[in-house]
Image (cartoon, rainbow, N blue to C red; front, side, top):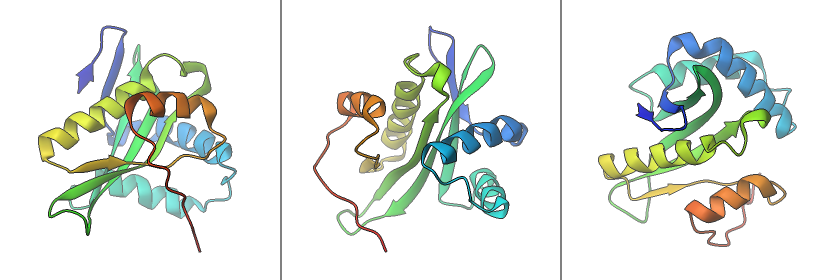
Length: 151
């Protein structure tokens, strides 16, 4: 757990966070126009975050005991290192809490864990139109200019 002087706390997701996570997750999916995700995918995802055998984890951020955001990460091997990378797959802060330092606190907590675990890289993607988030990302990381392709 990381506590900041601004009343922001970053900690691991716990089973009792399910209702708050569901609410934030639904907002995140709506933001990315993916609200048709089947409920069993969300159920499986949440269960994976709680399973120590899974190579993924979730952090939440609270302000005054209110859950206001989350970060979902996948730890994976890579061809460019003998160690591991951490892929920050999802980061979301409720619209009313944006600008509070919650997003930065989540990223810094992931960086701290990466340093402690010896992971060689933390990386993520965002949509080019996500200008508010990109201001933060430009302050805490390097944009290396890569473009994502999908099938």
